Length: 76
Image (cartoon, rainbow, N blue to C red; front, side, top):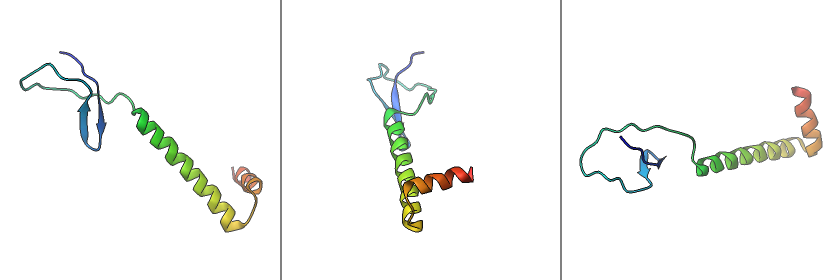
């Protein structure tokens, strides 16, 4: 038994290094953590969603960012 490192993306596992076998093997695939790109995508998506919420609040209500923040805090 040995381990190799790779990345799962769009339904495909891509192995980073050559695998030193030339016959069929049973394998176990363990998902360790999100890749750095996935983390960056999630962070970017969260920032865009936050910006969209702020933009929507400002355009819908014609209030300042500080007023929007105060309203949000008051709702909590």
